[in-house]
Image (cartoon, rainbow over all chains, first blue to last red):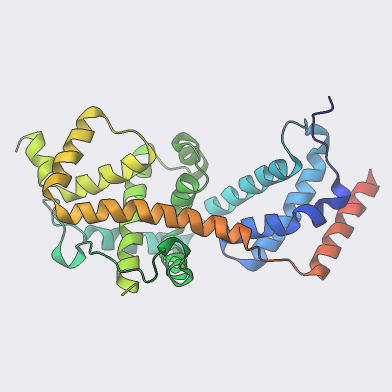
Length: 189
Length: 91
């Protein structure tokens, strides 16, 4: 029994608030919403305290609650009306990447990108551009992309949570990357 | 057009397979098709390379965001802990 983790709500804010806030902010890019989420997580957690079995750490447990709330936000964002417009525009744009026979259109040829400095992974400027390009994706695509590539969620889970078919999932994964890469190339010159 | 010829000339399908490869396993047939396509298509070879790098960078972006933490201000935190204490006292 001594190896089980315990919860101590009296120090939740000190120990986890900043972490949860940064976690939420990086995923939903909305400061106010991120703050609200942190509060919601703590309040929801209080109601579940007696169901905590101690098998995971306090932080892991709180983060799991946060993850579910972020997915709710993804779902809400991607079912909005404004997003449908953005999505149509992006689909349209994507159709232009290739000729009907599947060849790249010449103006969309991927080209080598020169990232200054030797380590693009730690190039702040490039990261900023990347962030901007991600925000340009339709909300549903960004949600699918993030859940797959960052959270490592299973494809089945993503399809269920975001209510997309498996066929659409693959279309979105493909298009999201085409758009993201094209945006990087356009912006980073 | 035979199925093999189709993939050799189809960059749309090739880029799709590149994305698929990054998150799940390709079938044996798909692997061969992609390899043949990439052998002959320098444009998709660039896409292939960049696509993997982009994934790495996105991961990096998110882990950086978590490590060089943006902080909540103290007033907000105090209010938050107070709220928690109130809830605890209710029970």
